[in-house]
Image (cartoon, rainbow over all chains, first blue to last red; front, side, top):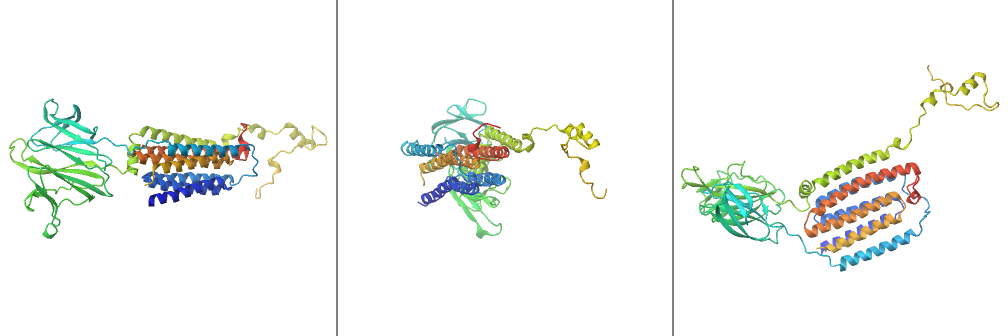
Length: 430
Length: 100
């Protein structure tokens, strides 16, 4: 309701400003009304989730371009034109009639034309795999026979790939071979609540088992990150924030009784949250620590990040005793989606899909700059005068007239006087 | 929630006002300003459709339109200044003969 009211008010101001721009006699007023109109359009950009464009609109249009207009208007003194001596009197009614006709046709087309507005386009869901099964070497991953990830080693994650929604057969092969270690049927469905649906397929345990976890890549809140904790260990764990080392009273359970194969999402963790006091423990016991997150190089929260922290079992001495396993937490970091219409999202598109148009536009701007300089450069409009010789040499007749005291060509007519140094008064002091 | 049609109709109205400015005004600078108004109306429709389809490409097009408009204004105003120097007028009714 508020939005509709704002739309009506600002829309009315925009149209009124445009009409006033057309009607005002003084070009300076027209420019100022146009600035009001641009501001209204910038407001609409904000209402339409385009904050970056709103900024550009105000800075470039209302700022730079309109200042250029005002500068030229005042430079030329062209605020007002003289008497209206129209040579094309038939143009005004014709333009009016054409405009009204165009408006009517457009209105009919928009309101009655049944424009196909099916709502937002849906991106295909994205899938990645995480290798958390210590007993299995590096794997290649295939979806319906097509490779989606190559040589994923233990404790690693593959990149996200887009797959068509629906049921898919995912198979894990030992790296470089055709022998399928694991085959799993997964169903990838689009989540209507999210702008992009993402899934993580985790292979873990001694089976190994495969679990499909919905991943959350939505835009994070300002200056915060998101951590999804997945338990790939063989028993349930707790996650504790121990706070200060010597003070038991500030201990806090972040999550309790996280069963194997279960996940929990910790949203809106502020960036640079101190994770050094966090530890995974046996379920139900604060003291029985399984793994401490005390390496700030690895365990940290950065803004716009969506981590999946997987607690997995790792052999203590690789290759010797398969039975001795310990818990290890591995953060697998991916970028959260940039917010719609924000500078980051615009920049990402600009430097990937629209790189060539960006370059072309840059060249165009350069050419326009050179063109403007050439056009306004004064000398380029005048033919160069070759008057060097004439200035140096006096006509012979003038010299003779000066000697004999009268004009040689036409008696009684004064000889044309040329600007000469001798006629100028001597500078004082010479 | 304002429907997409409302933005498109507003955009059409602004576009037509701009077109009328191009046809009716005689001051060349005002004609240029009306062209800017038309470009802005088109931009508004592009952003509205970008929101409707949840695709950022419309924003990129608006970005490029703005860049091209800046280039066009730079050259156009330079042309107006040059014409004003030679003819001492920027009344476009007096510029219909293609003489130097």
